Amino acid sequence: MISSKDLARLLGDLLLNEPGSTGEAFSDIVVDSREAQPGSLFVALRGDARDGHQFVDDALRRGASAALVSEASGLRGSSMFVVQDPLFALQEAGRRWRDHVKAQIVGITGSVGKTTVREATYQVLSRHFSAHQSPRNFNGDIGLPIALLGIDSGDEWAVIEIGPYSQEEMELLVDSARPNTGIVTNVGPTHLERFGTLADTERIKGLLPASLPESGLAILNGDDPRVRRMRERTSAETFTFGVGPRCDLRASDVVANGFDGIEFDLDHTHNRDQVRVKAPLVGAHQAMTALAASAVGLRAGLTLPEIAESLASLRPGSRLARRMAWNGATIIDDAYNAAPLSMQAALDLLTNCRPRRVALLGDMFELGTEEQAAHRALGAYAADRCDWLIAVGERSRDTVESAREAGHAQACWVAEADQAADLLFHSLEPGDTLLVKASHAMHLETVVERLAAT
Image 1: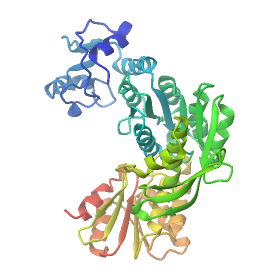
Image 2: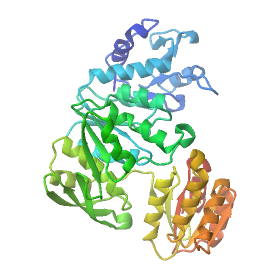
Image 3: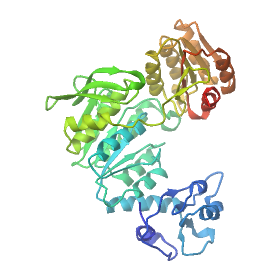
Image 4: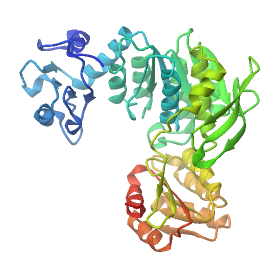
C-alpha cells in the first residue's frame, strides 16, 4: 500500500497545496467514512445524492490519517491532499503507481465469474510468489485505482478484477491497469441495460485482450464462441481453456461432489501433460474457474503438479455458503447476485441434492431487451432441476409461467421476499435443500436470515 509520501509524489502537478507526508503506508483507502480506521486515506467523492466532503471530519475521527479533497472544501492542514477533482486524482494516482511497480498485472473481465476466478488465481500465485489481488469487488472506476494503489513495490504479481458498466469506463480501466495477462471468463446477458446488446457486451469485454501488449497473453474461454472470437482482436499470444476438445487447457472427466468440491483431469493439450485435480470448489461449473487460474499458473512457470497442489488448497469464496435452517433443512445461500449464467450454474448444483430440492429465485436486473426471454429461459431450465420452485418479483412471473409450461407442477409466485419467507417457514421440511438466489436488490438475504438457525 502506498504511503502519504508516495501519494504526494504521484499527484505532483495535480496538488493545489503542499501537504505534509511521511513514509508510513496507509492502512487502506476508503470512500465511505464509516469504513475508515487508523491509518486510512479517505477520498471525498461527490455523488448524485451525497458529497463526501461532508464526512471528512467523521473519517478523521475514526482514525484516517489523511484525506484527498477538492479545493472547494476549504479544508486546511497537513493531512489534506487538495486537488481540483478527487476522483480524477485517485484514478491518475492509480495509473501512475502502476508504472512504478514491477508486478505482472493479470486483468480479469467477463459477464460472470470474475470474482471467483480472481480469488482462485491469486491463491494459486500467492503460494509461490509475492502477490496482490483486488479487495472485494473493487473493479470499477473507483475501485480499480484503489486496487492498483494496494500493490506493494515488492509484489511480483497482481490480480486485478475489471468490471465496467460502459465502453468508456472499460477504456479507462484497461488504460489504468495495462495488464500483461488478460482473462475473459464469458460473455452473457448481464448489464444489458447499460451495455446494449450481447454484441455490445462482446465488443466491450474484448477491449481487455485488445489492450494487451505483443508480449502479453490473452487467456480466453474456448467454450464461449463470443470470447473465442476475441483472438482476432489481440496482438498478444492467446491461450484457451474449457472442456471442448480444441482448448489448449482442458478439464475432462469432471465429477461434482456437492459441497465436498470437484475433481477432474487437467490436460495441457500442447504438452500432452495430465494431472488429476481435486479442488474445494462447489459445482461442476467451477472447473472453468480452476482452468483460468491454472492458465495463469502456467504463464508464471508453474508445473501441472504444482498447480494441482495449489488448487487442492484453495479457500472458496464466501458468496455461496451452506447454512442450516432452524428445522435442520440445508440452505444454499447465493443471494448476493444473479445473472442467467450464474442462475443456471446454481440450479445445476441443486440438481444433485436430495431428497427435496427447493429453489427460491428472484428477479434478475439490468437485462435490457433480454429481460423477458432470460426469465422465461430460467423457468424452463429450472423445471427439471428442482422439485418446488418459488419465484419472487414482477420479472419472475415469466419464470413461473415458463416452468409451468415445461411441466413443473410445483411452481408458484410471490410478490415480496417476506411472503416467500412466510411460505417457506410453514412449508420447508427438515430434509429439504433450499437454494436462494436473486439480484441483490431483491434482498433475499432477509429470507435466509429469517430461516437460518441462530
